[in-house]
Image 1 (spheres, rainbow, N blue to C red):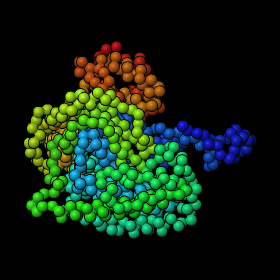
Image 2: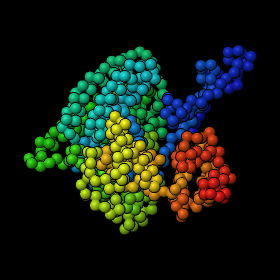
Image 3: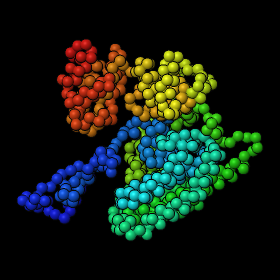
Length: 571
């Protein structure tokens, strides 16, 4: 709940005749502002450059990921967990995977757990580097931004070499990880960890004893232990208040109980304590990573000569399935929590039918306590819920060998003329894979407005990618359709601005005129109706997108007029 804070003056106590201070200005800062990142709006009252009133308004970011998972399917949701927090996507992968593994009764091999720990701690370091660099530049320590982002760039290179992506890695799989550690990448990680503690010392030399930094953090944003617990704070924010609670110690997962590390705890609960906690956590994360590498070396020495590694190297892994992994049968319901650089991530999922989850609940770091929502227990006894998912590709043999180098192979769904067009398109980009999005557009246009699993596989073969990578791109953007659609697509915006101004009535009228259900196609195959999160036309809400053209300031009459013209008659 927002609360108005009045500073230095009484409301309305302004001398109208004062030429400098006789008129106050009301101004919105955010949510579309570089400092608020789309999630916070500050309503301020200004007297020149002095803020007299500040009213924070929160709640601007809700992307509906929980419902996305429940409708998209638990196997295909992994690519979306990356986007929950782009600063540390691998930790989000692990939290979701741990919940599913607990439900399915799966035990991750020890080597897979060690690799997960290694990647999670590298991600934690990357997240804290973001904090240190951006906070430094906000408080005037511009040099710190470049120092920390230099180290983060090194981590990007390591993660890119290891997972194939700088961000949104989608590397974790149910039951383990995508592939084993390559020896060259392992050596690069060792080199990074060898020099990183000295870099942290350098950061502290610049900040910890710096009078300006100290004064701008000391006794600012003080949170008591009681307040932190009452507000369900987690992670460094909780430990900075003096609460010694770290899930890696209290409720170990992924083998954290076998690692030797310390948990830093603050004393005052101000910004300075939270800074000190994060700096020390970077040291401890590096310490854990060194131990993880030692465990990998020890495991390698235990292997039987002539036997391959427990996890195949990335270069040999060629999964023909869109989700790139096995499909365990989910029979029980439970949840799991993982500790992230910004706090806890709790993935809570309930059993559904073969491909769908009955319920997903993702708890944010400040909402990591069990949630009362639940599904009917009788679902656990539904035989259909334990069916294995049907094979993708509608009967095609997915074990058929396919060339992946982008130079050849049997492309079953793409016509030779289209392949030649895509080849010419790819030559316009510095990297071949960068042409994936325009290629998806072109394939969608060519194949009736949607992209089939066969097309996704052919594009993967064409670009030398894995099908799961192509699917991750296609499923992320709402402009791509992964199922059959009508000749005309009506996308009704249901963001808060549109909802408040009549989007529900507009949607009902669209369905009535077209004869199509929401997220469905009309019986005559002419219209597909869908809802989208936001079309960026809040000032002229409500609105919908019809075949790429915006129609704004809608009401029932306008809807009938626009769609009636498309149908060739006035409804």
